[in-house]
Amino acid sequence: SAIIGAAEILEGRPADDDRRRFAISVGEQARRLQGIIERMLMLARVEQLQAPEDAVQVDLGGLLQCCVDERSLSLQARRLSCSLAIGEPLDVRGDPFLLRQALLNLLDNAIAFSPAGGDIEIALQRRDQRAEVSLRDHGNGAPDYALPQVFDRFYSLASPASGKKSSGLGLALVREVARLHGGEADFANHPEGGALARLLLPLA
Image (cartoon, rainbow, N blue to C red):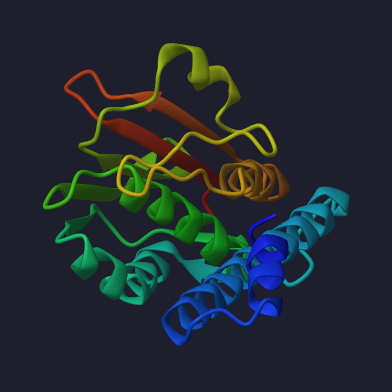
């Protein structure tokens, strides 16, 4: 709707400032639409798999550090500090691309719901024969009514920072990637405030 509305206004030859503003809007909405399509295609592909296609040994600690580095600009833009605590080196066997996407989605979610200037705490530790990745933000957490639905496809809450909703596909993809690797994902409000998301995967 935003793209169509901006296109209709541009057809009317608006002033230069308005034309520039609506052209930027078209670009932003087109990129958002492209992101939704790419996530839908990825989610559909993962749902059809019974096992990872390109399974290799994956160092989760190293992968987490790469994800934090990749989101450094987003963290800086919100003045967020991000701590990464790795109890011990832990490896899993799986598809490094899909695992990276799942971890990035969890981190993106924590960034979106963190208050500006807040903290994000990421930890990797052993839980029996599984590796546990946990991400805690210090935002308002999720309403009780939303907790059972956060992993549902297309379900999303408005980000406090932007007031906008996401595609609602990020956490759905996390859940499917966890399933594909014989693990699980969960999400809850932390007893001391904020939200806590976890990804648990069998150790290699």
